[in-house]
Length: 85
Image (cartoon, rainbow, N blue to C red; front, side):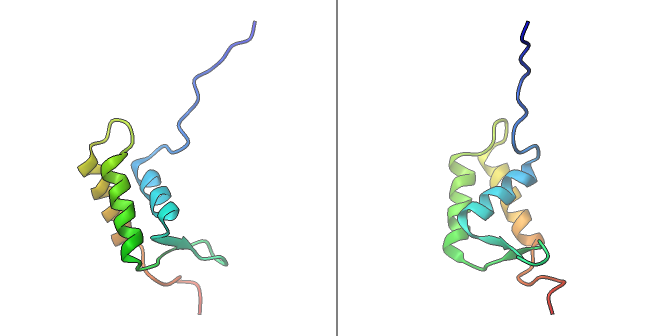
C-alpha cells in the first residue's frame, strides 16, 4: 500500500522567508564568489519587499511581524562581502 507523508514547507523559518523575499525583490544579492548576502541599497526593491511582507506574510505570522523580520534581516546585512578584497 502506498503511503503519503505530509510535505514540509520549503522555508522553515521566518528569517529564511524574509531572505527569500529580499532576494526575489532584488533588495539583496549573493556574492558570486563567497556566498555572503549583500544589501543592494535599492529603495524600490526594499519597498516591494515590505509590500510583500504586509500583503502576503507566511501562515501564522502577522503582517507587522513579517515586516519586522524583513527589517531585521536588512539591518544584519552589509553592502560589501567581508571576504572580497
